[in-house]
Length: 173
Image (cartoon, rainbow, N blue to C red; front, side):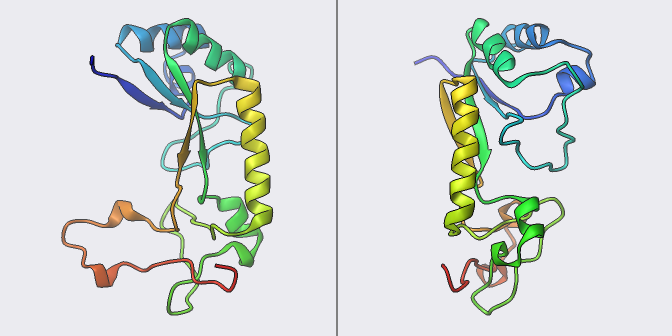
């Protein structure tokens, strides 16, 4: 089996920083040997993190980007952040995870974990993602942040298990 080269293509730096159009960016990725790309969309956009994730006006559309990547032989996987939503966290205390000791989850820099068991939230999320998939027709999907809320990026080798809070222990969960 030959190796696969996959990339997260969540931002629009190809346009904002490098001045490339969608076709040019897809050709560039293919010229670098990219086989697979995890992409996001504007219907169910990924929350911002340390990387600005706003496309330039008029330089991008969801279906067009996926089509350009596919035209270059790159398989596309539409992404969604399942239990990471700053908007939901801020809009409703009911969406904030609770620790085993009853404490509300505190965001870590850019990460706002949310309670994974709200039927209303999950239905809204599923509807938006289904629309994104229907419009872009990717080769597959990638469910990111599909976990109980935690910022594992800070769990370093010296981190002890006792230092890791567990969530969600709200009434619903």
